[in-house]
Amino acid sequence: MKISVNSLSKKFVHHPVLRDVHLTLQGPGSYALLGVNGSGKSTLLRIIAGIQQASKGTVEYSFDGHRIAPELVFRHVSFCAPGMDIIEEMSLREFLQFHFRFKQPLKGITIDDIIALIGIRQAGDKLIGDFSSGMKQRVKLAQAIFSDTQALFLDEPCTNLDDKGVAQYQNWMQQYGQGRLVVVASNDEREYSFCNERIAVEQFK
Ligand SMILES: Nc1ncnc2c1ncn2[C@@H]1O[C@H](COP(=O)(O)OP(=O)(O)OP(=O)(O)O)[C@@H](O)[C@H]1O
Image 1 (cartoon, rainbow, N blue to C red):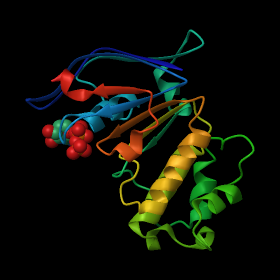
Image 2 (cartoon, rainbow, N blue to C red):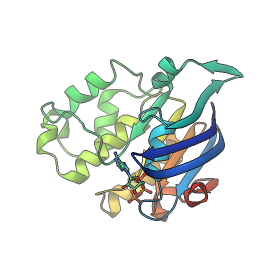
Image 3 (cartoon, rainbow, N blue to C red):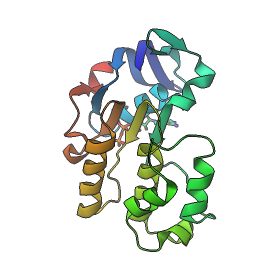
Image 4 (tube, rainbow, N blue to C red):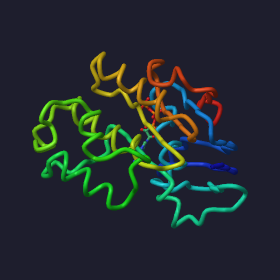
């Protein structure tokens, strides 16, 4: 997958955050969006992922030279961010069954495998609302990483994770991030050390 960002700007009311962004993101490949707090990493990631509108400019997606229509982009994209909601009233199994009605899991991986990979004993039948914040973060990561999408967008992926959770994230990315377009917005080296390309978001001020 290729994503072309052209002349993109973002303003919140009168507060300019991103100015005249030109980028080409080519998958397979991995990119880190880096910068200080408030520099616009999450905003840029959300716009690239099609979750937030730019004030100006365009984001175009293509695969094998064919343009993907904006309304179909969601099928090709997985997203995980700390502020993203998951359905707290469902058990983990119900949530994954619901999620995988809209997206396919990676080939050869079942919901039982994902529950086992998340690695929390008897978590399958427990309500997500009763999970700790670190357990919820593992679930959010798992639903994104184990969806069979070409592009994977991760905002601060190790938020609330303990050392074991961080190691698990790094292991998942090594195993399941290959061959995809991965974009990580981060301030924490442990989250993006595997990325081949680094983009300083401050250059777009
Ligand atoms: N919905 C919003 N309304 C108004 N301002 C916003 C909104 N979202 C973000 N901003 C502002 O845009 C700027 C960039 O925010 P953003 O969250 O993209 O930064 P960031 O680089 O991801 O920061 P951090 O490292 O703290 O996560 C900040 O000044 C923030 O206050």
